[in-house]
Length: 139
View 1 (cartoon, one colour):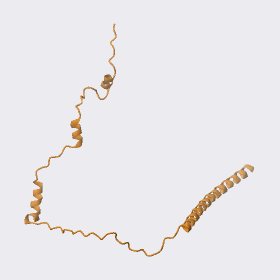
View 2 (tube, one colour; view 1 turned 180 degrees about the horizontal axis):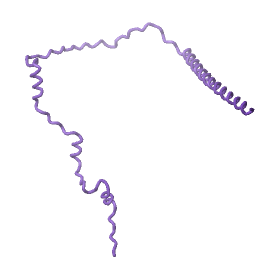
View 3 (cartoon, rainbow, N blue to C red; view 1 turned 30 degrees about the vertical axis):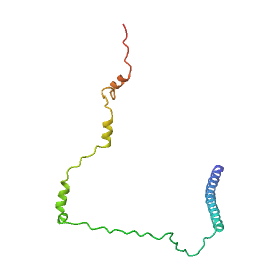
């Protein structure tokens, strides 16, 4: 019986501790927020206020440059240009453009050729190529 009462009191103590701890955290957060707010307000009091005079238009340093702008001329249009089929077909009749070799192909061409038979890539043959030749035992 005594054990049950002690266990119940311990559980109640733990619940109260948890509740008060969360209140402590909230109170600490609120206090730190209020302290920061006080610092901001004090800083705004010591900061000089900007003059509230109407903003004057700045005077230009030099006279604006006037550069004559040449108006673009309209391209000349002929009857052939208006025929869509003819221009479309003419575009397809252009001589084929020879493709420039890719950078990879250029680099491969500069490489010296590799003897692929010299070293096997994998397996037993590769291990045999790496190992020293075994000495022949004299009988």
